[in-house]
Amino acid sequence: MKTISPKTIDRALLYIRALENLLKKKRDKISSSELADITGSSDVQVRKDISFFGKVGIPRIGYETKKLKDVLENFILQDNIVHIALFGVGNLGKAILKYPGFQTDKIKLVAAFDKAKNKVLKEVNGVKIYPVEQSVRLIKKVHAEIGIIAVPSENSQEVADIMVNSGLKGIVNFAPNRVSVPKNVYVKDIDFSIEIFSIFSHTQL
Amino acid sequence: MKTISPKTIDRALLYIRALENLLKKKRDKISSSELADITGSSDVQVRKDISFFGKVGIPRIGYETKKLKDVLENFILQDNIVHIALFGVGNLGKAILKYPGFQTDKIKLVAAFDKAKNKVLKEVNGVKIYPVEQSVRLIKKVHAEIGIIAVPSENSQEVADIMVNSGLKGIVNFAPNRVSVPKNVYVKDIDFSIEIFSIFSHTQL
DNA sequence: TACAATTCGTTATTAATTTCACGATTTATT
DNA sequence: AATAAATCGTGAAATTAATAACGAATTGTA
Image 1: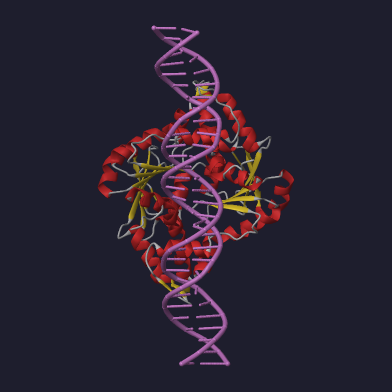
Image 2: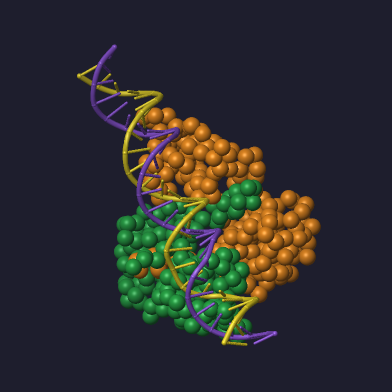
């Protein structure tokens, strides 16, 4: 039994999104090479990735859009819905609250926290903003799995500690400094300026 | 002559940021293992990465913080300053404008564009907001290299076309759909919901 | 000065990932 | 029915990346 690689999972997420868009356009079939073009990959890579999930393609035709999407989603998400808690409702936090991809049937932003009294108890895009003091209790109550850090870096560690205490198992950190957490908690750092430098380096090659 | 791998470059950017923080704390020496801890890597990986840039370490001591930072920066950025143009001054755009890492001596956000008349000609964090119509001319004038797409997905392709026409060679795309560009333009997509699903998958393992 | 301790730098090894090559399957066409 | 064309699926090869192993250099200490 081969184990599935993290890279394959990440690409599968791109495939799923592409397939959703194709479904909206009523495309019911798609070939590996076209899916590769859309997602910035290669046809062989697409077929190899998909082969981890089973034999879903039809030779000479390609893949059925709906079926492929279901297979990938079921494998990766099973029946789960991902519940997210957001910390920090500044500009970035608001952008995240308004982000269309965060209120679908597979992913729900369920609670936002901020320490500014004037933001608390307001609602943005259907999500209520609570005071940080209530976060541990509320996150446990709503069973969130993933947390987003969108506070200034001075407060990021403090927020990370709250997240760990609440039982969150994954964190996206937008603050430009690393936070320390127990090793059973997975942290993904997104640092805007490092992304920029990285692209700059790529364009220099 | 070995060529430097993209992964090494990306980690080197993490090292540079860590070294900057250490310098602020007046730490003038650092070992590979401590740098590894800070950046979430391993000591061997750190030494191996750094060895691409030359012999800068001192056995038994470690690296001189300042010297190592200079070596890495010079190699990756040479004497360049990266100039950025931002499209879209909504919540996300404002968050980017206020992001501290975008006004340093190595990276400058030089212009922002929006089509809303009421935003135009205002200034956020020292950056002036211009009408989109002037973007091609202005980007050429200020010699920006990298563009950031922070507009809704309906407008992302249109903005990408402007960027290509302006001569930008790298794009960070925050809109949740891929844009098509000539293959000499490098695009990095940052899709919040895919990041979340990716973390969720990691935590499920 | 000799020896131990520490940390870098580098070659060798192993592991992971991507690409290649090609057989198998299905549909269309003559 | 035979052949051609298109596309999937996959084992093998090639590439890339990470880890391990260890020598070399430096400092501290007896």
